[in-house]
Image (cartoon, rainbow, N blue to C red; front, side):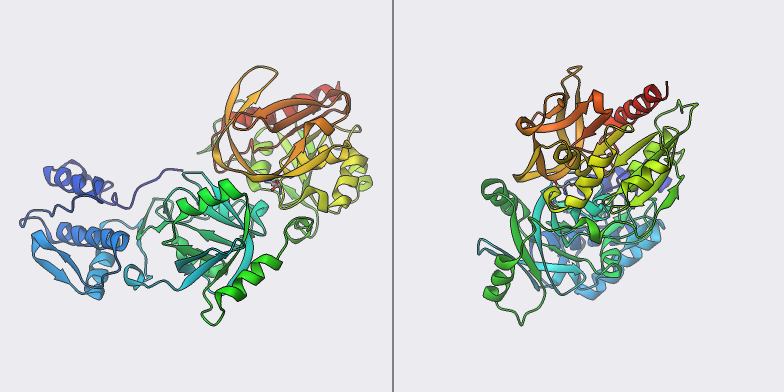
Length: 481
Ligand SMILES: NC(=O)CC[C@H](N)C(=O)O
């Protein structure tokens, strides 16, 4: 995904990009937090407006003052005046730059609370839906891809806290959806970008969340919360914009709520089987040698991300997606070349029906498990899964393939892991997460199975591990011979 920072709506304008004036304008953009150098008095009106809009943005970051001033230009504007200028700047320079119409935002007072089960109360400002929501707080270290994260069904029951402080700048678009819905409990961020600028953008993050009834909070110390989660482990929290509820009432809700042992898969899986045939769009395709053979793969939807389906299709697969409770016998009757067990939310030990399905399939056809699918395979082999302290969520996890020594930077999103000591002989750990040496991949040649704890489909994240889909193709190919 290409990113344009909120300071960059000027760039697509060829005049401003090359003119000496543009160079003068770009400098204050880049050092927005420290200097607010104003354009010369001779600068065109739009340039002066842009400077005011930036002052406005800087003021949002540093204070909640209602009256803003841009001293060097002598401009002193009321909030509404600045906002109307900002809207003109945003719509006037290029269409892709969408003015955020959360008009009162820079001056908004805290209207939301995040109460964690440890008793800490964090005041914040709300965006997206209002209400009260309970969930497990996890932090995600991805720098980009908040839309893919929002639509990853594996986040059901969780609040995602983005450690990257600047979110919303690329808006949202129809192509980056990883499922048809947002299943997560809410989004926690440091700064909500005041304007949205990306050529693919169709909507602001704020409007998108409101439409999907998802809560978001910003202006909260995400770094402090992350440090707390790293030290104390994942915590249950309650997000609320309801001022009638006391802190103690919210705390009680957090302390009573449970995520361990709950079947979250049944809330995110599809209702009926369907065929999938979309490849990765040719504009984004990076694998240029499609397979000449076609493979029929049945994919169990435990909360499947669309990019798993797109990547498999790009590798030459024809896919039938089935719901999580679809009988193994019906799947085997289809005589597929392979079966994929997808990612999915929650505790793998809370879905014995899915473990039983995996048990009935492994050994009969080649299988590939991704994340939840990997954990279910671990359980189906008689192994154990356990809850990690704070899990892995982000696009920067180094993973070593022990067979080759190759290290990939991977996309990860899980709170549970397979205990390799509990696995039977024959099941081999193929990958380890280099941050903590946890099991990141398995192979059991006799059973024709392979699995990864992380996300070869990325979305968001690096493409290093895309080759895993090729490995699955080879596994299916060798089974045909
Ligand atoms: N992405 C996933 O499949 C998540 C797996 C599982 N729900 C976990 O949190 O560990």
